[in-house]
Length: 459
Figure 1 (spheres, rainbow, N blue to C red):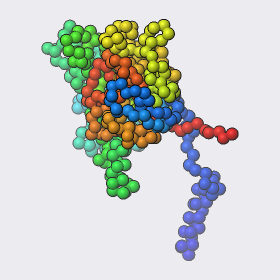
Figure 2 (figure 1 turned 90 degrees about the horizontal axis):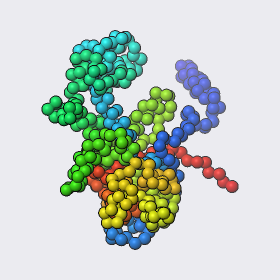
Figure 3 (figure 1 turned 30 degrees about the vertical axis):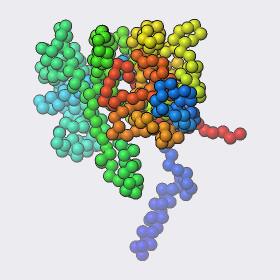
């Protein structure tokens, strides 16, 4: 009798759960997704093209044989990442470190937690006032934050607090003590200016090594494996190396660029340089989290991650839809019909000024290619996600090709720069630099995967 009763109850439950779909397979519907074009980016519609050198390899590098490949659609920055845009990253890291230190100091002094705290208590962790926590925040505090070896790890910062870097606005002595610890000691100042200790600007993040996990799953022939070894933790000093302007050119006077290029507003729209491959990857991670933090706050879907382009994507975008073009503008010539150079590079065996620029130029200079991308040739060479191997084209896939090994420190750079000869400006030319190295002639731009595809109409 009990068995029958249970069966009846189960049947009722199943019927009540499915009364909207009438027992049909209708799928699990989610909130409608409307793709948003990222700010400052342009959509590169996917397609097939011949990657590599379709003409004579003048330098005899033999590292880019012609190969037909296909790439999916993606968004790409119209310009190289500028000093102004990278400074937004630097300032965010600087502010987050200061807020974290102030919150810890407030907790040590047992200040904050009341409705209207004063002094350094204003910068207490957001969960300091336990009366204002929702149930999830209480759960996290009791089961993670309070039992952690570091009692402050993971606790939410108070980004609504008015953080000031002006000494006359310091709220109390504890605030001054924290802020002073972020600067160099007075004996290292010069020109009477307080100097920030940029070595303390460290961005910490985690990422999942999907390729490594897939390889491990294939080796063990298991669908599910322990993900722990493939969750990587990184800590990167993110301030650009401004000394590259001097280190890259021995017996050359470039101190004005060292002193002002990254910090002076005159150069705010110029491409950032002195950034290593690892710093560029960290920037991509921050940009993704920064955007998705906003998306969550508005109850919107998160966006696909920002990242460096792989070689196949970069060359496809640089060609601008012109299959056999030598340069991004298509023709094999470096001058237009008015005898003006079409890019910023080193022409005429070292006449840097003949292209109207001695060093870099603003990121939105010269005419863009047919995909509306600026300076895909010259100005600064650009980091890609791909590792360098002279024979990579012989074995990479024909669909979205990318050779990326974690233990290969040579990373492909593309496009040539203001100090390069014309050969490196060709869309098919390849070069490399080490991932932990920064240069005065290497910058980067980011891409973002395009989610979905246009509906195909069959006539």
